Length: 317
Image (cartoon, rainbow, N blue to C red):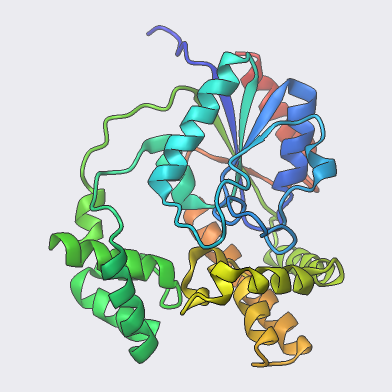
């Protein structure tokens, strides 16, 4: 069998606060790479501190793609991300550089590396109707509805994950088919690169929880609440009837900060809620990552030599 002639790419996957950004920047600097962000919060302008977006200093000399490509009130689907990221990968390869895909959004990684089955496009009227129902009954009730329609999807989707509950119900209402059935449709697309999949994550859950708490405190100290105040002042968000239903503001930390500024709870409660929401996100990310059976796991803080050896072996072939 002939060797795979496709060029190389690195996929740096991992839960939030696991050290992906620093590693991606270091490797891009050393190996002539460019970073493609695979993060559903980093696509939005104005979500900087709370989304742990790479700072201007971190980006100096390293091209970063798929960051700041939408306003926080604009939609951006996984299919749009996959198309834009694939264009970025082709451009990086044309420049003779190494694509480094870095992030923690599992759906984005799946869409980019494997493609998405065709399914109904978003429909604003249906989405608004579902959001109105959620406002009246709560997302947990809509999750229960979904469990009756599509038990597999309900098992995958957390009862508080409003965005994915809404999308699953939207697909059902538009097509009469479940989102699970749509996803079983074959996808005829091959990613243009051979990919080394690396999951960077601490071995101990307690270590990750400590990193999450430290980072959330650093965000608060670094002006996170002022960032959310600026978002609240934007006319498109200030006039929105349900701003917290927007995908951008469902990003962990932003909903809690928004509700704090509405007077729902004090700063200490914001901190506790924000850290807990981030831990829940990390748990969902780790659940998805365990399904990536061809990925290599390592903690960049304690197993850096192992990561470097894996990368060197991959780049040598």
